[in-house]
Length: 298
Image: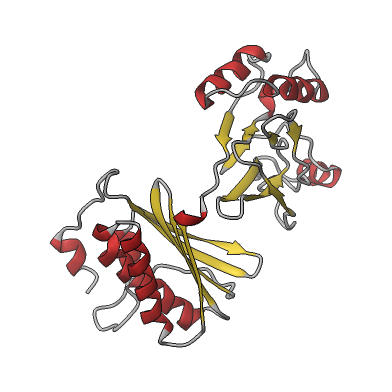
């Protein structure tokens, strides 16, 4: 998840100097904190573009700020962002926010951050109630800056909700991946999703063989949706393209985009992960494709 704001954070001095030297009529800056949580390992990776530090409250412990080095604001360019990986306890409360929540003319940033930690440290409550409590307790009526608050309850996945396999880099791994996906979905009583999952898994594993590197990892997660991930060691991100009528391939990601509820890719420490989601049968029904949509791919 990400949360951004238009300045106001404590930027490194070199970023402030660079922004002062730039033509402000042409340069647009924004601060942002970005977090990716893995519910299997229960670890969260953060990157910070000059934004407020994330706050976390773990059960039975006081709130604390997560030390993520503040990189340059978005728009400055030319500087990499340092990542920090943190293990988060089950039912921990993660809080992302803009500086308008903790800083005003009448309150320094340090005072505001101390007040935020104090407010967050307390009895566990529902997320909506926690948001209301923070906003009603802190000084949020100064009107000097926009205020945004995002809170998330950390929940990992139990082992029985995860399927995880490593496949060798060889053509027969495509068929093996389909078999593993089918077997796991049948064990989860998700028979209605077998055909679509097999098709999309086949496409992603084929792409990993053609364009990726190293061993292939297939991971299925059963949560509020079914999530399928295909990992490899290649760094090149997938790009959907429109295949020509005479092309024999190039339609895999079109199928993924049309048949899944959502899909995307992300970098990993050792390459990339391409993923898609499918709605569970008892959840929101997936949109059915028209004949025209299906024919347009061929």
